Image 1 (cartoon, rainbow, N blue to C red):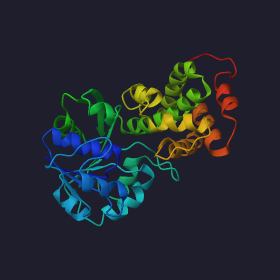
Image 2: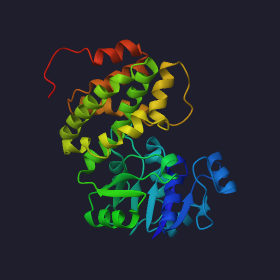
Image 3: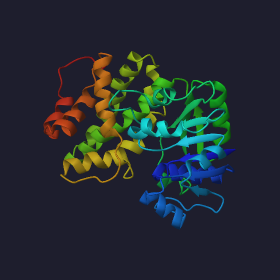
Image 4: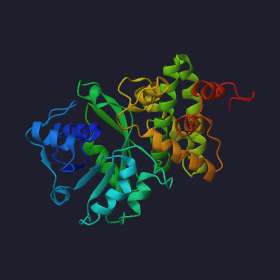
Length: 320
C-alpha cells in the first residue's frame, strides 16, 4: 500500500518506520523550515528510529499526497484545522485520511474526525482514527502492544486493520467513533493528574484515579451519544499504563514537573484537551471532577495538593 505520513514528530516518524517494516511504500512529509524535519532529512534518523533507504522524505506536500492511497496525519491536534485548510488545496478524492493523534479542539470542543469532516466529503475521502497504548521507545525494542482503528466506514476500517496488523501491533476494530476519540483524548488529562500525584508523592492514589477517571469519561461519552463502555477499552483505560505510569509519557511528565516548578518543553496534548473537556462537560451537563481539578491547577494556578486531595475527599456517596 502507498502511504504518506504527514507529520514527522515522535509518533509520526515511528509510524513511518513501522509501516515500512511491514512492507508498505512510505513517504514522510514535514515542513521544510522545521528543525525536526531538517534533522530527519539530513540524518535519516531521530531519537527514536532509523529510517531505511526505502522511505522517501519530502517537504513537498503535493508529492506526498499524490503518492498516497492512505494519508496518515500525525501533528498537534490543535493545528489540525489550519492544516486541513492547506491539505484540501490538493485533490483528495479516493484517498483515506487516518488520524494518528489524540485530542479535542480547545476552542470548539470538536473531535478530530469532526474537524476533518468539515473540510472533506467523507463519501469520497473517508476518515479513520488510529489510537491506543504504546510508545515508540518500546515498539522499536520489539515490545508488542494492542491498538484500535475506528471509522464510520466499515470497509475502510477492515482494510486498514488487515493491512497494518503485525506481530508488533495487533489491531482491534473500534465500534464507536465518538467514544474512541473522546476516550483517547481524555486519557491524556488523566495522565496529567497522575503526574501531579507522582510529583506530590501520592503515587498510591493513582489506582483510585484510574477507577474514577474511567467512570467520569464514560459518562461524558454516553452523554455525547457514544457507547460508555468505550472508556473501558483500548482507547482509554487500555492506554493508562502508557500514560499514567510510563517514564516516556509526555502528559504524566508535564504534571510531575508542574508540581516541582519545572518547565516541560515538549508537547503535552492533555493541556488543551483539559480545556476542551471543560467546555464539553458544560455543553452536555456532565460532572467531570478530575478534569475540572486539573483545569483549576493548570489554568487558574490553584494549589495542586489541596485541589487533587479534595477529589478523594468528596461527599460520601455510592461508588456506582
